[in-house]
Amino acid sequence: MNPSATPVAQSASSQSLRRSAEIRKLFRDLYGGDCRLFRAPGRINLIGEHTDYNDGFVMPAAIDLHCCVAVAPTANRAVEVYSTNFNESRSFDLDQPQPRGDWSDYVQGVAIMLEKSGYHFPGAKMLISSEVPMGSGLSSSAALEVAAGVALLDTQDTPCDRVQLAHICRRAENEFVGARCGIMDQFVSCNGRAGNLLMLDCRSLEHSFLPVPEDARLVICNTMVKHAIAGGEYNIRRAQCDEGVRLLSCVVPGLSALRDLSPEDLEQFHELLPSTIYKRCRHVVGENQRVLAAAAALEEQDLQRLGKLMAASHQSLRDDYEVSCPELDLMVELANVVEGVYGARMTGGGFGGCTVNVIASDAVPEFASKIASAYEARTGIVPEIHVSASPLNSNSRFHQRSVALLRSASNDHAQIV
Ligand code: ADP
Ligand code: MG
Image 1 (spheres, rainbow, N blue to C red):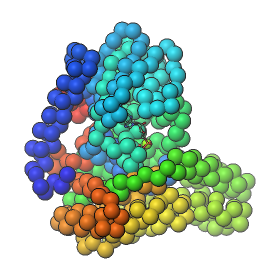
Image 2: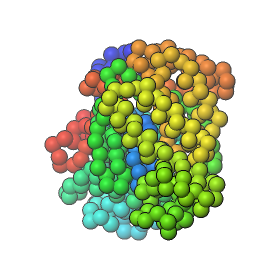
Image 3: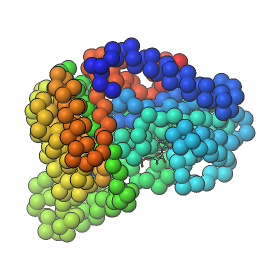
């Protein structure tokens, strides 16, 4: 995906045309008949990790790896769905929702939550094909939910706005799949913009777009490892944050989430907290401040400062929140000694997956080859490296306005034609 290797504008559009033709053919072979195609992107998070479910601040960007969903309506209140990534089919009845404990719950959950929000579907045949690696911290789950949501909405008449769809998809993941994620992933998959980071207040959902500086690139390094403890640990971290709020709410007025806790109050009352809870709170409180400082640094185009904040974020996730792992630490350590790297940190929930790196554009080719060979030499694992294109390029590989909403004039980005 190195954009300097091929003309991006040309290759991005021809690749996506080829992909859409392949998906249409697969759909025809599987179900017969035509379909409409929708897509939604995965994401990286530049800074602001484990802050979304604490009502805090995050700074993600949509990436040019997408989940595509092909859809055609039926009239029997049944949904048939095939995932090319699993090579499996599933079906469910819209009138008898029932979680199955597998990947199809993400699709069924979205359908059911949309129905609970007042939408009504006749039934559908769907085909999923995603480029977003699963369980790598790039949010394949939100990409699937949002793409499935947009596809399902296409089979009925009532419009839905992007913010509402993000809420519905999160609800599907929280209440139907049973993962207690925050709003960040679904929100950025619905609202991301080419060449921009999304600065989001997860409490008010106020947001703004911050351009990636012209002479920098965002680079994703996938460690290719996933540690089995990840799922349970996520919910444990959430419970520890809730416990911190509970213990401090009697001494800090108006504390309803860690977002409301100042560093001064945390230090003043830290003896009320067991040491592990104190460390978890210190990460969240510090990380919220780092996101705000990172937004200011980006506005001033101060990439050195941004890099320092990313380093502090990684360190806090490793030592206080304890969600990193040796492979992520190594990938960050290797990046930090390559010339032209401003900052590197783990991205996503942790325990494996990817790092995000901010790098001077002209240093990217050397970075990609150096880090890939150094990581392989130390671990025996070949990593995947994804590079964003110039933010000025309208076909940026860090993706454009991501999801289209139905019946709106701007739906051509989602519907692949
Ligand atoms: P992440 O969102 O970081 O990739 P999650 O564990 O939150 O990791 O979500 C991954 C899960 O989402 C997969 O195990 C699978 O159940 C579901 N999923 C994602 N993409 C697809 C796909 N293309 N087809 C079927 N299920 C998918
Ligand atoms: Mg996920």
